[in-house]
Image 1 (cartoon, rainbow, N blue to C red):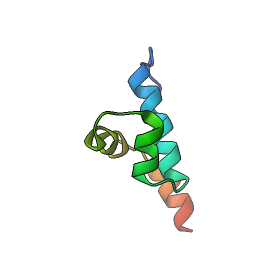
Image 2: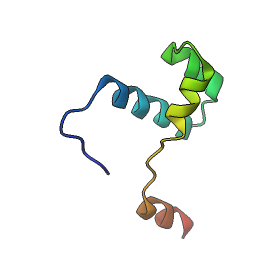
Image 3: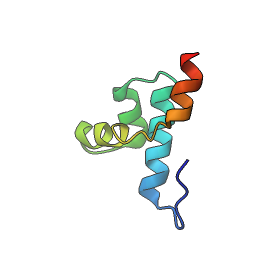
Image 4: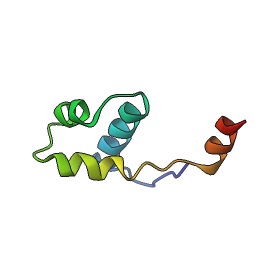
Length: 61
């Protein structure tokens, strides 16, 4: 997990969006909850999901 010295509003929104996506919410619902102007903005947040290799390995076995 990456820890930022001074988290921003954007990093909080990203964590919120990524967590919802991991829970199975679709992009349209996440977009609505965030209130972003464009769907592209929401999609960019979701493409920055910082999945750790440890989590991937743990789920593989």
